[in-house]
Image (cartoon, rainbow, N blue to C red):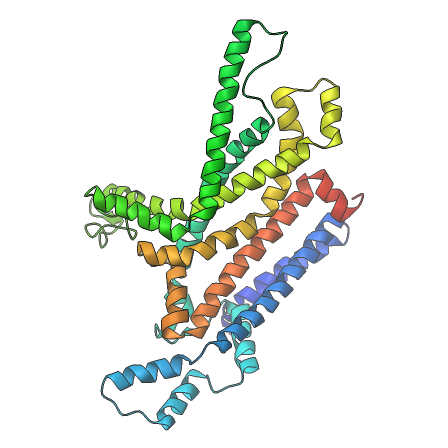
Length: 395
């Protein structure tokens, strides 16, 4: 009996255990007190988000009962208003919004149950299955792609933004000036190309980029890299009689790059602009001039001062970057033919009016963003002296 009780309320006990541990550690530590406050604020924010999301789903015209009855009507059955009311009562849609929200939050808090999908006729947890993790993987891979490109090239762009095209230092020999001029010109050309790419990434819609790539494959007579697998490998198990299916992995890699590249395109363009602006702003501050006056120059100056101090704002914006990337994913998923949570969200909002499924997806996105913000705040408070001083005082 006790085991069943804990099994049915496992998530609540996990949250209480983490909160209790942080509260206990925070009695003697200013840092853990800050972590406990951020943890409590994150939970309250999630509660507020759940109410907003659930309320917005109520604004949508119609509900699952009407959709289901309309489907039965197309099968030749005679439907009356009493049938619609009975279906609403069966689904619990006849209850007030506040009651349904409290029930949904209670089930979610106690055991992680996100409700029942009336369009899929199964639990939302089962309907989402691996789809949410697929969307999460797409977004994180796109963010990793954007950071790997934007951070080093953003630093390079900031380093060359005020440089000239040629070396005019009279203390250098003619050969040194020639070699330096060639290198500086290459850097300036690369900087101009990066700016053009970043502006194009901000101006070109992601779905148009996806369509353009697909059309290039069509014109080249190659199979389109839509979906996650080709028809040949779609139903092949990952592990068969001969062990791991390397052919399916190769086919998967040949398809997975497209959504990652497309949704990471605009994120990369924006991060390029952000990194360059942060570093240029830091490089114009007095402490950089003071370091330069002490004889610090070149890579040591840039890596030790403006670049180092520009990383914290970038890390702290990971959650917001995830939101921006996920916002681009639904339309890209429709164009490419993916079956992830983003495509399921479009279906739930525009076709089936599956309110609990749509609310669960939006809530999970908010959960990821809030969790990322929580962890980045905690990590930065631990490793960045400026953040630690601002939130902990002298602790």
